[in-house]
Length: 626
Image (cartoon, rainbow, N blue to C red):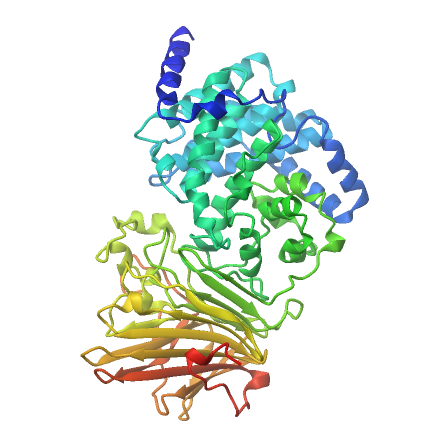
């Protein structure tokens, strides 16, 4: 222990160099245990809400029921998959958050004893896999919550063993330059790792106040790097799934600061951060499917505990319109797979669900590094039209070559879809380097990641330019048209002299996708495609009929006057590409002569609008003009 104390002191002095230590030195001492997220006595507010509201009673019951199941499970073992221990760290966080909540709310010793057993098993791991530091961060957070919340009933020896593990396998490894690259990046790693280590530092504050202060100050300084990417409007750089990761841990960090020190040090006022909840709300379509661009899963959206924090912080219940829909489900058991679920009870019970109303607008646009527009006909009609339109750049963290891509649904069917991410280990285990960002990187050879399978344009069978960028140049509602327009020329530099795309909902009845392209000094073969789960029947009048789940959609090409609509397979052509069962591409190719301009306009007509004859035919420059 003497050696450890000397080592700690030496490293603390080293760490202090180059840090803004003034704030750290001025940090007040945090409260006694429990000090993370939910202070002593605050259980009463939750218990009061449980007694008064059937929704919170059901959520509380689901957490306790899952905790009863966890009690019967053997402790987690250190089994690494590829280069990751992350699934074990996440399961540890899920178990310890659930068990600790269950004990605090019921005082049932079974939950505390099982949590103690879990922590001692994890403390015995050789390490928490610092070479993939997310693993350490989530494991440290798991152990910190368990240690802090169960502190009164842990045996002295268990406290010592668990605290030593948090220190040596968590906090200390974050001081090692070979592991702490997260401090210098502006993606979810920064948010998750700073949050996890700070939870550990807070949990062990009294053991080494100076170390804890320095680690917390380091986080307060460096977490601003990813937070800058929320500016100006809250659009999250890495898309839906990683919002659920990075933003949730950012919120956990801010909430922990507020509880421990009575302030968030201005973090919530970083430009765009409080606006990001609105972005997330619009990212779920009426079908329940998310707008899953970039590395996002392709399944249904999910309940996000962080949304309850945003609603509470901003005192805006309308942010919970989508979450309220989830809470109206009869079965909450699926929610318990979320490792952060107990946070819903911490942040949610002060939100009056009876006052949750739909958002005021049916269109939302966010600029930034990966700008998006989402629009819909209605917030209350489950069969309404929904469109998500993405611009940005393939060079964004977790980016795809999907600039100009879109999703579209009506009648409860996602007609134009995105395959989303492929499991990382399925690619890395075959030796692929999927994290390269250069134009020739192996990442772009993966079917799901390049533009050939996204709902955008491909020119002469070439990839979009990684360095290219596009923004939303115009968006809004004008008369009967909800719309967004983007200049995509930057991602087709050298392939086209210019490219603009506009997408709109016309009269809340149908969707128009209009491309205005110009060939350079050589002819340009432009391919227009849409990925769909539907069966496709091609007609001879520039139309195709799409059918799925008993619903119908007509795809009509209005310009050029004559094209050959066709389909393409999405089946894998390599041993590493994932199967894309139940999908195909529908679209057409058109050769634009050298130096000439051409409009490509496609209408997506739900069954109720399929007979529409008079349709929008307006140059993009006039969209939005009365």
